[in-house]
Length: 431
Image (tube, rainbow, N blue to C red; front, side, top):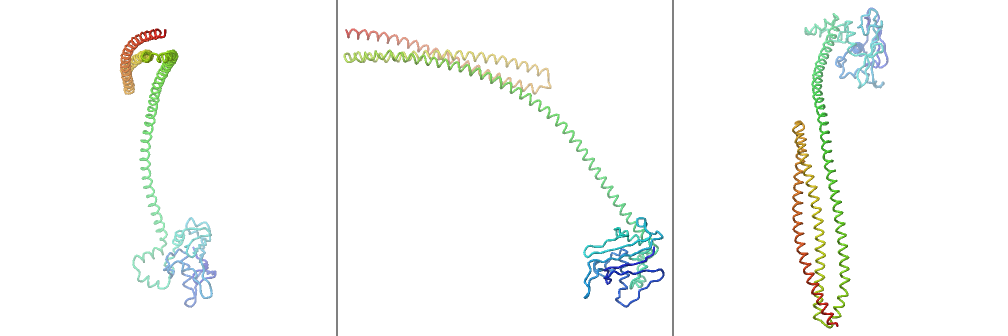
């Protein structure tokens, strides 16, 4: 490859676009100090990939941009283009498609450099390898700057070896080997990362399998729980319906008893009104006779009050006897119902015990049902005992009431006899 042209724009002292032709043979640049001869060499190094600002005689890479003068303003970018004759096709394969290569490096202030080859943006490393294969480059020994001869004489063996390698054109091979090593290291790191990911995925897969088994087991247990819950709800509903039916029957019985008691109370009220109506004329006659016979009138009044009290007591005792008889009938019916329920519960306990013996796997469920039935039987026994006690108390009360009624009837008979005698005496007195 041969360099044929160097074009500069805004690079150091070359503020205006300037083109430097490199013809076959010897090309020289002659001028006084400060005219920019070194800037041409630095531009050549810069476009070939120089990365050291110190080699460009600056503090930073932005110093290669024209900084301005008293007559010209500063620039914000610099660009250098090197034209190469690639007729021999010595360039790398990626850049070897054309006979002429234009390598351009552009720098914008504060944004860094970009490289283009024939208008296509490339990496700085690609440009450096391009010139390394051509035994050139930013640090090539073919580019001799000021003071470099003395540096070569005093250079260390390592630096001389580097200069010889560049002169032999193997620097590009070293660069490629370094890139290959970096790629191999990156590939190795990726493989290790893939191994780690594979192990993580395997552990995650094992965890997911365990979770799937647990989920299947949970689903099965949830189904069994729902079935058992439905069975329990069915049993509770049946018990509640039976209790509601029993409560309805008891309410109907209580309504009948209330109706009977109401009729009895109405009859007693009617009797009381009739008795009160019958007694009122007698009181009037007693009041008239009391003016004549005070003692007999007073005695008659006392006998009348006693008679009324005895009649009221008789009526009350009769009503109480009726109520006690109704209570006895109701208690007898409730006792019969309780006995039926007790027999039914005992039959259920026997059936449940048989099911427990025949189906051990349903033991807990059936045992729970048996316990519930046993509790129901105990409650029914308690109810039967309470009914029996109530019936005994009712019988005792009925006997006591009957005795009081007999005594009241006897007293009523005595009072009636005394009243008849008093009336006869009053009639005799009236005559």
